Amino acid sequence: MRRTIAAATLALLAAGCGGGSAVSDFGTVVKGSKGTTVPVELRPGQRFSLAVADNPSVGDEWKLVAVPDPKVASFISEEHKTEGGGVGAGGTTYFVFNSKRPGTTEIKLYDCWRCGQATTPPDEQSRQQSGEAVFTVSVK
Image 1 (cartoon, rainbow, N blue to C red):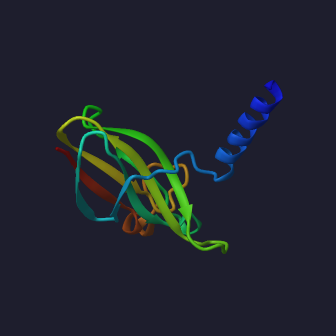
Image 2: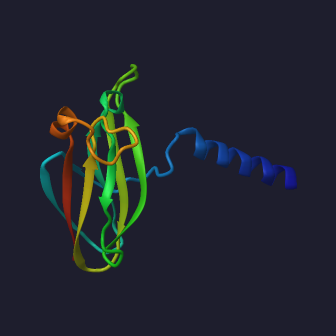
């Protein structure tokens, strides 16, 4: 009996790790992009994701720079999904949250283009390609 339980547990753990993603349910997906402000309306207890197109091979690196009011929404994880199988293929970064209590909060994502480990663009081209996506979250 113990071997059966251990084998089943090991199989479940292996299956959960195989996809490379900590979260499989992105909930309601809301797309944003550099230079936009997107309204998001939710119910309490609703899972949602803020999605931005990215391509790390050309220098995109999105970061969560303004966390939401924890009474209104809580951050769960950041997930990356590549589209296509080729080297250098772009994809989408998902910032996954749960809505909490009624209220309004702002979430800011920033793409520091070709910044590497730096937090500010290193040159003029990087400054021009970098940008912020803002999401105004209302839980009703």
